[in-house]
Image 1: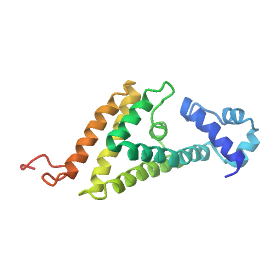
Image 2: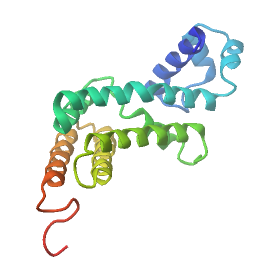
Image 3: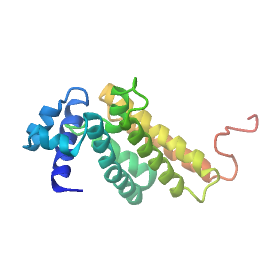
Image 4: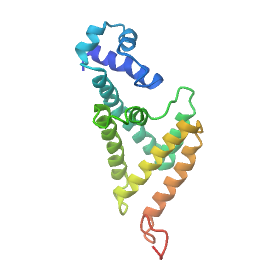
Length: 191
């Protein structure tokens, strides 16, 4: 990636995350990057392309951060760090989730593809983490759903404590999955 392209994406990332996709104009991105609109459009044919690039650029760093937190503290540690992040004054939720909400009426938008790809990568990574447990894919999907719900709830209510509750639930799911007595998703002998 060229230095100019990287500067544009970083400038757009700051604005998009801080103000929202639709609120930010290409003029604002060019101004923040200290470039002309002509240079901006040389690197990105449209705002839609820039939005997709912004989300694609967030993919690896976000996943790496989740992996580090999980390595340091397991599922409980992952949710504890998400809670800590949500307590920051500049936290505005999950950038992927917010992008999808802004573009919900545009299912074919390239940003939707980038967001779905990221969420799939997170879920696949979680499945790898639980590869030794029965039905690792289902467990990963459950934990990913808890993450998504906590992101949405914390953003809506401005209550970071939801990550603690989601983390307790995720930990219980992991314990249940690791228990040979009750299969994942079953609550007892009547199921």
